[in-house]
Image (cartoon, rainbow, N blue to C red; front, side, top):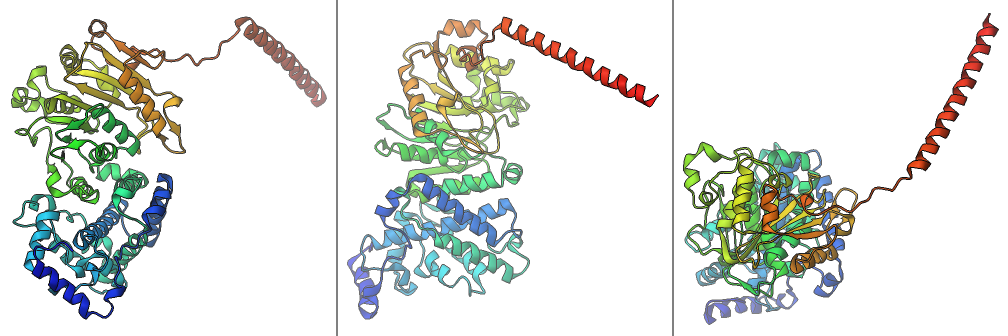
Length: 557
């Protein structure tokens, strides 16, 4: 057990010695072994998760709005994992200690203080998910008990360095909300149903999972409640396959980075993919991001904790990135990943001071008020270090439209910031069939050429029923082309600066990469002969019909 001093440790073990059942205590994680978990494929884990979510949906079907349902599932999932993560920390690998079965009164102020300084929060044994799950069905005070537990966890960080990272984590998991039901009994019934199903999930440590469980749950729920999500959430979750590609592009050939940043962080999936793909890298200061949507901001912070990123290794800020940017006084970032909202409105020229903003002033023009895409691009560029690289998901239209967007493209190309533009296949994102582009920015290019990659053909994705998917082989192929910078017929071309400038700074991939000819060759002579035969047969048929009609008319007379 992780304790502050020897005296406290002795107190804990004294409790176990007095308890006759102490030898029977075990770590109650309800998990499968690491060996079996590793044998499970990502698809198997994902299928298990989705099946369980559907069971939860059936349990509360028709009672809870889809968007609200998402919050309750993810909130409960987070509650379970934060409980198990904290338990693992406290037990410190000592299998003789079962934290869940300790009485709360054995916890000394020293133990609590030490845990909060390390983990950022504190959970008493009685407050753990496993203990609440045991009696959830019979607990008449379940909704208020949960509310008090969440308040206690958040309040435990007050006065500590972790306060801002813990504050409001459970704000969207309102267990007393009328959305769960009109009576306490209805609320408790639905909460207990969700808790039961989440408790049944066979999971181990996050680092042992092939999938981003929390992100997968989020993606799955967003997809299945897409219509409502689009109205209420105003976002599209970045599929993990796309997140993986973006992370690898941003960190390509960097042996170490100072920190990673996402200016439109969402639920943190892009940052987490960077962690997953590059654990061997030395990430000195951790993970940074900003998110405007309060609900999604909470999800991002939850996601950091759930992936064992401690509070002192991440900083997710709440607010409008374009109007109230955070981290401006910090060191520039060596890696930036982003999927900003497509063509959203922003204040733009209605605020005349913005043209003097350090982020936008160099371009000499602001992004259109109805299309903030390039505002995010310029913001990202201003936060990028001289050795860094940024990979940004972009709407294709910004690369060929005129006006202010053309002027911004000119600024980017003239200053040699555009390394590569990659056109991806359509239908990769839930909720939209748009074929997105990835813009790769760099401040350390060795030449003045810009690379264009057309990755829209079937050799760059696997088609599924509802969505296309980038598999590992497709990602590796794109990265190989990106790295070599060699021209590949119908796929990739590196274009000189002069060619782009003469083309009015059009950066559309299709303007430089000739698509493969897929049309069937037609023999004109054969086609004409077939047409003549068809016409002849039609004339013959028409004559026969006229003959029959005439005979019928004679019979009537």
